[in-house]
Image (cartoon, rainbow, N blue to C red; front, side):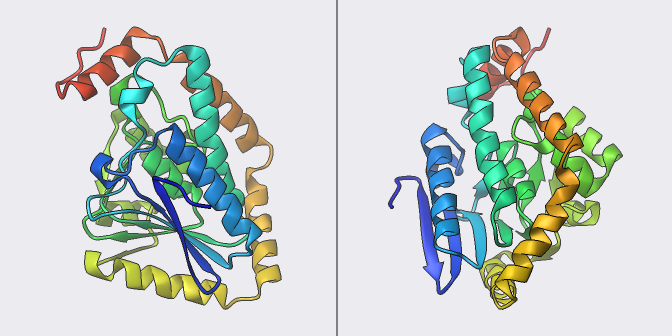
Length: 257
């Protein structure tokens, strides 16, 4: 299959999914999310031994969701939007082989959530990551309220989500978000080498290992993710959400009630 804003490329049995909207800092809109879901399914159907997720260009991994699209959503539309993002993040988490986020540049909001849905994360030294939704009058809606505390601990997760804090690559690595930080020019080669090492492992055992690790999410995280979806959707149409997103689009500071 082919898509306008997503590329799926193969190197033997390693698949690389690239979000290709560099003019929009690879921000995610409906078409891109749907294409990502289809590409992930195709990679799984073709028995990829590893899947790399990255963004086109040098400026951004995924700068977030398309705020121009989100700003006028109703609660019901916000629910559908949240479900779509969850579907893609869940597909990354449940992918039968290891997934690697190659984080180049900005990874904010939904971009951070896609990165933390992957098994492993490697960052270029100029990467900046954060859950910045609070300044838009909403909360993370694609899994961060449940996944982020597992990676960085409760205190750091709350600071990142409550304050919209952005972490540089080294700070994020120290917090537990990145397993490795390398020079920007070495990111692709480093991730390719890591993917090759993973692909060389026994596929059946690797799948079993990933499924066993993911069992920790069953139950409490599942209910938490469902709650997050409802809370995320309920904020669309509120004055703070409208003001936060209008201010972003108009490139000014928001004035919340």
